[in-house]
Length: 474
Ligand code: ADP
Ligand code: ASP
Ligand code: MG
Image 1 (cartoon, protein in one colour):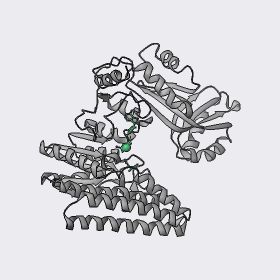
Image 2 (tube, helix red, strand yellow; image 1 turned 135 degrees about the vertical axis):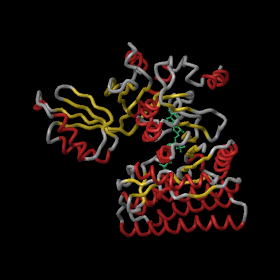
Image 3 (cartoon, rainbow, N blue to C red; image 1 turned 45 degrees about the horizontal axis):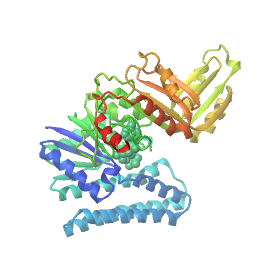
Image 4 (cartoon, rainbow, N blue to C red; image 1 turned 180 degrees about the vertical axis):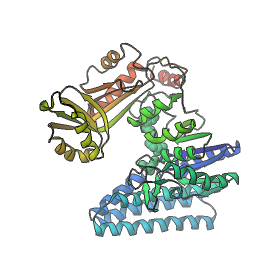
């Protein structure tokens, strides 16, 4: 069987037109003899709105929460009615949408009475996005003649109980995914499931963290040993930087698992950072493709990318970070200092992105601002502590940066007008990162992009796409 996992993000299912495009893409794969397993996100912006509704309810704003839910109900009902023409099927789908929103409203009312939003309730509330979109997409696919069947992702993706960022239990998923999905695929059916949502071992709904549908796609692809994992989104692939920041960003045609993972972790939203791992384990190629431009070949992520003549493949940027400076002169020459510091981060379950040390001072960066005051209070038992928010991390990724002399000089020359707070290079051969003020971040990315992607290697980057841009600007 020629199995392929196809994950479609929020913009690929945002409205009836997008869902029709998605259906045509899947139908095309079936016509080519492929057996797709489809993973879908909630319709674009729905997860954000569900979180807002949850927040409003938990603050006692019952009417506000129900108003958000009511707008979402209309959006989904309208889409359902537009997607399915047969009156009986249409009525069934609209009823299903209504039932889901009735349950959601009940939870929101309860929350507005209890006034306490736990991570567990938050996951239950956001899960409605994917639970409903996956039903609608299944119905739309059937309209397109695809033999689609809905599968509840929560029966396959089993996680621990860390609500909002649950850790998948690979051994269970590796058993359940083939058990539930392969018989369907063998019968020529196309399973459709929601991404992002999962359940713990007692059956409570969990989620894999924001952007987690990519991760679901990769977990399913890994468990089924699929031929490929396709991540369908709203850009032509992994680009040399976020095209929203740098409109002349170029598509990267091919990139290694390691480079893609680094980019994702350091802020390239196009891929959830955990996506690569299940693919690496089974050496399954991951393709990033554009559902609005399906003929484009996208980005191929493979274990060993071909040699690239340009030093960098892409520039990522992660915002909303904080820097913590810990200065302890009394710890001079004592061992165990770093351990004591990291134990505090561990206690607060906070990941550190970057570290830079001297004899008595340590600077660290974290992305969880809410725990910062507690962390600082604990650290201040050891040393003097200062922290500053609104920082951004810029991460330049490319193979063998360490092996190229003069690279740091070129990077910092390109942003000589910007104040750099912290630098890290060396831990990984493929990334060079530094921290700056968040307000300088977009400008820094653009300057670096202009400096390093003047003459990109045509074997690796889609330079053809730049020609019309150059022609129109001349
Ligand atoms: P989806 O809903 O399909 O999962 P996302 O919004 O999560 O889509 O990710 C796609 C977006 O990622 C793009 O619209 C783009 O703005 C952003 N992005 C950030 N960095 C990059 C990059 N290096 N290459 C491509 N897109 C990027
Ligand atoms: N809908 C979820 C989110 O917006 C998951 C995803 O789209 O990947 O975070
Ligand atoms: Mg995404």
